[in-house]
Amino acid sequence: MPLVDDPRTIRSAVGHSGRTAVLATKHGKLELIGPSMSRVLGIEVVAVDIDTDQLGTFSGEIPRTLSELDCAIAKARLAMEERGSDLGMASEGTFSPHPDVPWLTTDRELVVLVDDRLDHVFWECAVSTEITAITETLGPDADLTSLAVRADLPRHAVMVRPALPSPRPGHGAAQVVYKGIRQSSDLASAVQASCATSGTHQAVVTTDFRAHCCPSRQVVIAAAAERLAHRVGSCCRACGAAGWGTVDIVRGVPCRWCGRHVPIVRAEIDGCWNCGIRIERSVGEAAADPGICATCNP
Ligand SMILES: [Zn+2]
Ligand SMILES: [Zn+2]
Image (cartoon, rainbow, N blue to C red; front, side, top):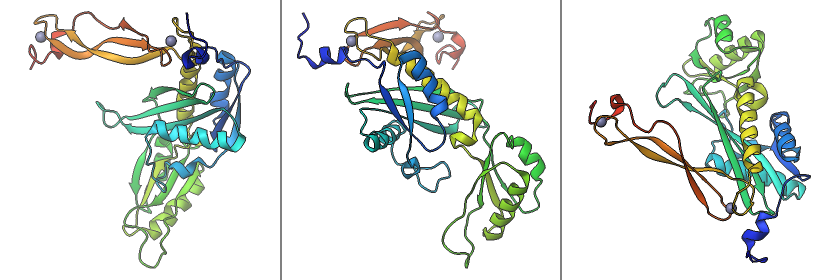
């Protein structure tokens, strides 16, 4: 018999349908995150215009010091405090070189749902390499027409700044970053202005990763929100709490020839944050290809 005043029993009874979540966003993420939360969970998401740049910017003017998860939670909490809400949301994107293919950029999008009624943070990620991402250093005479094609302008946007060292002596302390540039005339003038203030007479052009400027990122944020909605909508079969899903992976598949364990994923573990139940689920092949075995193919 469950104890009625056990916090785990109380948490099992908390649902989400009919509640309103506040979404911290300055960059138009409501239409990416709201629909799946509404359709799958019956949560109405409302945008709160929070200046999330204080927690770090893609342009590097303000470095992100928190982990992506802590940063997303901090953003959601800003919106919750602003509106006095017990349900908050935010998303956080991270761009990095692909571990195996360094010239490919990987976009990892994290979306959180902070629930103070449950005293729990739900989160999910989506990862994509189908992202438009350029970083190019160029001089004042560079061919901007081909750059615009590589940067997918005007569908995407770019940021332009002076190459380091910058600024040149006598040009003041602040480094100007031109953001949200989609038109070739704006690109040309930003490149000229940046070259003029750079110590190397060069400008750096990068993809503007802010969500409203980056459609290839928007689909990844929407995918992460969809995964989050389904996770929150999955209930633990033991205690009924929301948020059942994968909590861990297990590595170690025996090599087909020698039987030694190769460190690839053997199983995923589904679990419940509320009652602690864990169930292992096998994934992939039962035996590993000798070609990836350190003993058979050193
Ligand atoms: Zn082997
Ligand atoms: Zn449970």
